[in-house]
Length: 378
Image (cartoon, rainbow, N blue to C red; front, side, top):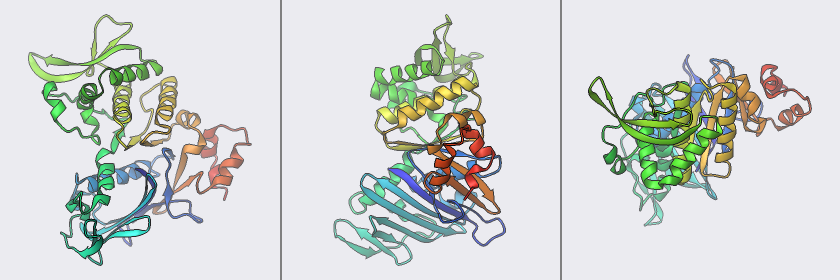
């Protein structure tokens, strides 16, 4: 399932109201495709946009409660593409309590919280229902009676969130490598990367490991082996960590000793290959893609991501304000974010096609499209 549109507003009517939408002329939604790059200046709302997508995923997966959110008064309008189905989900909550929640599949209303109506598949009709005001209706999902909730739940559960400028699990170890196969891994938690590797190796075997090794080589990290190893620090067992055998070194390098750039790339590629090879439909959020990598590796990583994700079940939403990254990713994948008062507005190929097409004839690089404000020539 792919997230196609999103409209969001927090603290509506308050002094600290903030919303995201499409361009300010005629488009109220942020349109998304399979591959997306959100570009913008500092403090324009790039990370906030990624965060609100993460928050709704947590809510749909049951991994967060309304009362646990930083902003407990918000409105979400989401549009998904699920195969041939069009899914529309609306959620409005205030002070941690649901005001309205609706779900439509191909214009067929399955849920209307305000009316207290929920569709029951086995009976083939809507029935009255009631649930706690601080919980989503999705929390009481029944795969027989409400199978239409399952795709939303899986989308939320399988979403991954990578803060590329962060640690991405570099200091986290697995206590029992043998027990991981029976454990659930949290695809949204970048700290679970060692677990995901162990799970991928057990489920997908050599194909998975070889794919990660090949991808690392494609971005000029020459490694011949990736595995896990027990680590002892100051005579105290630390746990199982990732290790790589680099081609030019005689000894292995464990994840604690890897450069931060190398580990960030390894962590992301493990996640990406696991999702692709296990055929897990998922959305991967990558904040500050390329942060900490040199120019050539950053370019190679972006090329690799785009090539691997095309025509797959994985959606990628990335952010950056790095000119080199901008110059590498084609404009067709861009959404330029600009902060206007209490709004973050987006310009992309869907809502500003003529501007994007006209720029191709200027001969300028992609960064100039952003730095010159060319995208605003409406």
